[in-house]
Length: 397
Image (cartoon, rainbow, N blue to C red):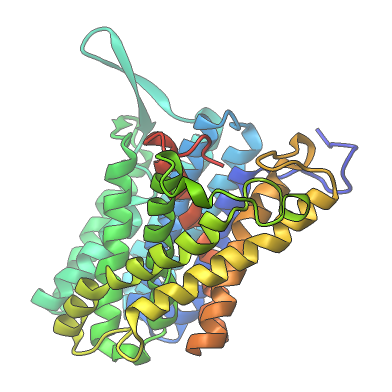
C-alpha cells in the first residue's frame, strides 16, 4: 500500500538498500565484460552475490521481511545470475549456436524466479521431527558458480572443450531449476562468505595476472585493501573501550559540541591502532609480491598509511557529532523516525574522512576514493555485526 507520509511509491529500508547495491556492481560488471575484462566482471559478480546472500539473512534477523523485498530481490537475481553471466559468456566466445544454451538458462531461470516469488522457500522434514528451509528447484545463483568453475577449467583443458563442458552444465542446470524437487539451501553465513569472497579473491588474482596493476580490478581491490587498517584499528579500539584501558584519557573533547562519547582517548588511540593495522598488512604485501611480482602499496609506508587513515576517521566523526548535538540528538541515540538516515550518516562520515585523507596525503585516484566510500559501509556493517556477536559492541547498528 502507498505510504501517504512520503512522496514516493515505496519506503525503502536498510535491507532494500543492501539489495540495491547490486545495481552498481552488476552495471560495472556489464561495462567491463563488454570491454573484455571478464575476470574483473566475474569478481564483481561474486561481490554482488555477497550482498544478495546478506540481504535475506539480515531481513529475517532484523524483522524486515516483506513481500516487496522478495520481489526486489528477484529482479536483482535476474541481473546478477542471468543477465551479466550471459554477457560474460557471449564475450567469452560462447556465441553462435552455443548461445542456445544461454537462452535455455535465461528462460528456465525466469520461470524459477517467478515460482520463488510466489511460494518462497519450502520446509523439508529432517530427522523425523525438525524442519529445514530448502529451495524448490535449483536456485539461479548456481549460474555464477558454474561459469566460474568452467572458466577456471578452461586454463587446463582449453577454450573449445570448456565450451562443451559449459553447454552440458547449462543444460543440466536449466533442467534442475524447473524440476519439482527440494534443493539444498545454505544456512551458514560463514559458508556463504567463504564461497563468495573466495570467488572474488580467485578472479581478482586472475585479473591481476592477466593485466597486472593496469587491470581495472586494481581500483576495487585497492579500495577494499585500504580498509584493512581501519578494520583492525576499529576492532582493537572496541577492545580498549570494552575493557576500559587508558581510562585517564576518557575526557570529552567538548561535551557541549560533540557529546560525552567523543573523548581524547579515541582521538589518540584510534590513529595509533590503525597505524598498527597498517603494519599488519606487511604479510599480505609480501604474498602479493610473490604472486604477481609487485604489490598494491609498494610505494607507501604501511604504518604512515594506517596513521593517516585513523586521523581521517576520527576527524570526520566530529562534524557528524556536532550536527546531532545541534538538533538535539544525544550521544549514542538513534532517532527512531529517521533511524536509517542516521545509521547511514554514521557509516558515511568516517568513510568520507578516510577516503579524503588517503586522497590528499597518499594521492590515490578519485575513482578509488569513491569506491572506498561506497564499499566501506558494507564492510562496517559486517564488522559491527561481528563485534556485536562477540559482545564488544552494544548494538549491530
